[in-house]
Structures are given as structure tokens and as C-alpha cells.
Image (cartoon, rainbow over all chains, first blue to last red; front, side):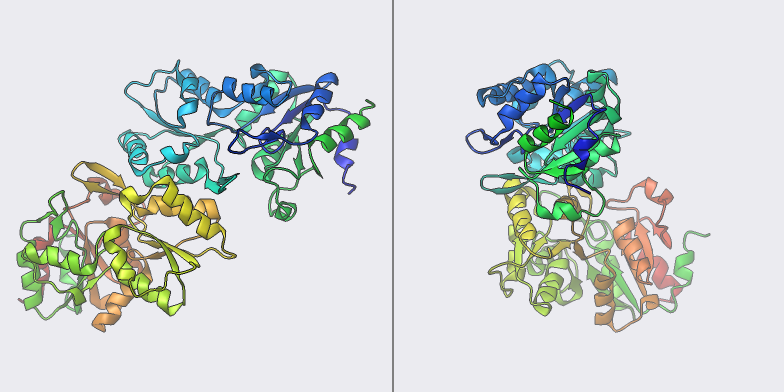
Length: 272
Length: 272
């Protein structure tokens, strides 16, 4: 199969969903830097006839702060175009009348401002990083084990991520710890959850086969999108590793050097 | 089945293995208190023709300190009669030429004094309690993910235990976190590992069907012993919960009020 064969079937596409960290920018101690060509690639997509949304598992800040950071890097992006787990979780909690005990990063707490948190009857964990102390994990555990039917939400289920000073444990590891201790299965909100991808498609008003996901995470971006019926293309930036090309269960519809190349291939096939 | 039918088949028994916390004593902030009748029950077993060993997943102190605590409570017990995970792990590490990165409670570190810990090529975790910080978990994770083939040992795999101020997450939860992050399966040293029970039987020089385990933990004590071919009796002290009687996979050979009752039933059937 030619490397760009995915783009040749791009005609029926009506929308594109972009992962953010590792596709638009690389994170770092200073907030991160844009990946070369990505600012321009987003501009080209916006000028095309394709709809565009952004889909991230970022849970360390509010969408507002996160989007402001991207805008400062030069990206043409607005809050209403960005889908992230915390606002989705807040909506689910309200819909189901659940009152969360939160174990999340301080920066994301404001996303839950409008949610009743008294007398908790469920637990929500995100990438709490250094807030994952034994004491805080025990507090979350004690809430869960004290419920007749424990309900645990996890904002994503990543294993680990890369920071400038090395690999760091992600929320998925702590989700597994609480699942085991309480003999419960967490409900994952965020990628690769089908519900999460579906909410992005609903917002665009299009069907899964009309949408393409571009991400650096083979399992959570590409695999999650494919499981939902979308096409999934992987970029060789961010957390991409050559071993992804031999993954036992997930095979991308295409692999490209970076977002710039993906967008150029896509738009040239559509006659732009 | 009569509640004491297990004791009627006690004639072929040559040895008894006792769990410690929840059977001999209840733990607490002051080091714990003996369970009524248990000091006397141990005396009776020692005066009988049965061999006696103690088997614990305690990993917060050295065997020496732990046994001294029990002696102070009045128990007739010596270090050589006690089997615990840390010395077993130290033996395995030496046998296999492995150099551990330790994530364990400070009190148990001396059990690994004779083990080379330079340039680690495996990780050993125990019930590290408040030492389970995000930083310490990340350090252990980074050792594992840096190995070509990660090797993780877990000293027991308990979900949680009870302290005077509530339930606390046990080592098993953190084992699951590291297993998930590194895509590896931990080797469990301690109950319910068959290898661990077998080492106790080897020390007594008897076969599994000649031995009886008495414990308060249905899965790790009773189930583990039964899986090894021993009989397993549960006491209604310690972490026993009425729901244990309806456990989906483990069914004790007998259930008794406490160690005193178990020993009286056992010895009366043997004509003592």
C-alpha cells in the first residue's frame, strides 16, 4: 500500500479531528513549542471546506488556559473547537446526578465549579501528577470502598507521558490501582472512549466514515478513532515510536512525517 | 456439613501453619493486642505432636523486630519459625543474580542488606505506605521501563488492610499500577503464591495434604493454601467479613470463631 493511499480516499471526508500535544506542539517546562509547519497546517485546514475540531486528553488546566497557550504559539483556535475530558466529565456528572470526590490537578478544578461536590457518591481521577500521594489515593479509595456500588471515572487512561526530565506515570496507572483495590471497572472519559469521539462527531453533525483523526498516540488517537468508525492517521512526531508500526492490534490507515505533510496530502487529493 | 467436619479429618495432619495479623493479634497504633485465647492456643499447639510454622505477608519491619513484638505480647515464637516475603525475596534475588531497586517501608530495608543494589535490573515493591509518593513510584517506573525486559517483584498482592483510622491501600494496588504502566506481570512473593507456601512445607518436611493453614484472609490464606494442596480454615477475627461465606471462588474447609476454637477442635479430634 502506498504511504499516501489513505489520502486518496479523502474525497468523502467532511471533517478532521486533531490531537494536540505531539501534533500541534511539543510540551516542555516553558509551556511548549509549536511543531514546525503545524501553525500553517491548521490555517490551511480552516481555509478548506473541511470542518475542524481538536481533541485532547489534557487534564492539567482548564480549556480556557490551555487554548490561550496555543493561541500564544500562533494557532488559530478557539475554546468551542476543543474537546477535553474534564468538561465532558462535568456534563456526565450533572446528567447522572453524581457528586464527585476529585483527585485531579489543581489547574483543572475550575472545570468542576458548577458541579455539586458535597457528600461524594463517586470519584473522578485525572492526571494529578505529584498530587498522587498515598494520602490522596487513600482518600479517594475510602470514598469508593464506602459506597454500596463504587463509581470511578478516569479522565483518559494513558500509561505514561514524556516530559523534558523523563517519562512520567499517567492517570491510567492510578486508575488500575483503584480498580484493583475496589474491584470495580472505571468509566474512561476522553480518548480512546467511543462516547468521547462520538461527541466530537455530533458537534460537527457528521458520520464516523466522514471523519479523519490525526494523532501521535497509536492506541488512544488512531485506535480509538478507528474503533468509532473513523479513519486514523499517525504522525511521526510527539510520542510516535518506530515499534508502533508493528503494533499487535492497531494499524494506522496511514503514517506521515508530521501534521504539515498530512494536511498537504489531504488537501491536494481534494483539489485544493 | 457440620461446622467442625474439617477437624474430623485432622488425623493425617502433621503440621499447622498460622497467619499472624488477625489470627494471633489485632494491629493498631500501639503495635497491637493479642486476640483473646491466641497466646494459649499457640502454647497448646507447641505441646502437641504437630509441627508449627507462622506465615505472614508483613513487610513493614524485619522478622527480628516483628517477632520481638509478638514475644512481648506473650507468644511463644522464634524467628526461625516465621516465613515472611522480604527474606524470601532476598533469597530469590541472590539466586537469580538480580540487583533490586527497592520501593519498600524503611523498616524492612535491612532484610536486603546482603543484596547488591547497585545498577538495578529489577524492582521490588512492598507495602511502602506513605513512601508511595508520585516521585517514588516514578523512580521505580523509570527503572522498569528502562530495562529491556522489566522484572517486577511484589511482596504480596493485598488490595487493602485495616488500621485503627480506616482502610489503607495495600501493595497490590501499586503492583497493578506498575504492571499497567510497563505492560509487565509482577512475580508475587508471599501469600497466596504456591512457591511461598511450598517453602514452608519444605521446612517442615511434610506434604501439602498433611498441613492445615489457619488465617483470616479468605483469598490469600485459605485460597492460597488450598491451591497448594493444603486444607484451609478461616477464623472470624481480623479482616473476616460475613460476605466471605458467599465468596464466588474460594470456600474454606471450615470456619471457626477464633484460633482458640480451631485449636481446641483440632486437638480434641486427635485425642489430646
